Length: 58
Image (cartoon, rainbow, N blue to C red; front, side):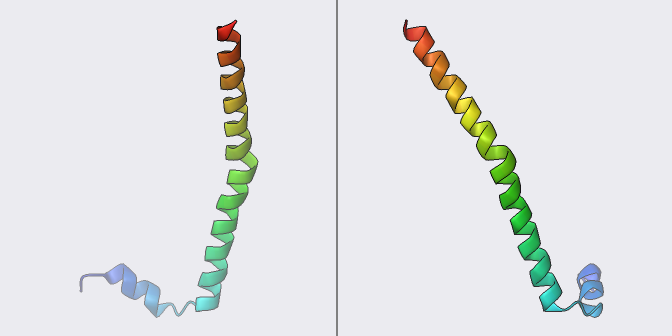
């Protein structure tokens, strides 16, 4: 038997609806993290970089 863990998971009889809800929740968490952390941090870094470039030209 090459995949004993896979057989164990298939024997548990987890409903596809529960798996779908879990996947949707995980994707929602990734999007929320991007919206709350990555986008503001990237915006701040771009702003600082542009401000620094303008100051160097003077």
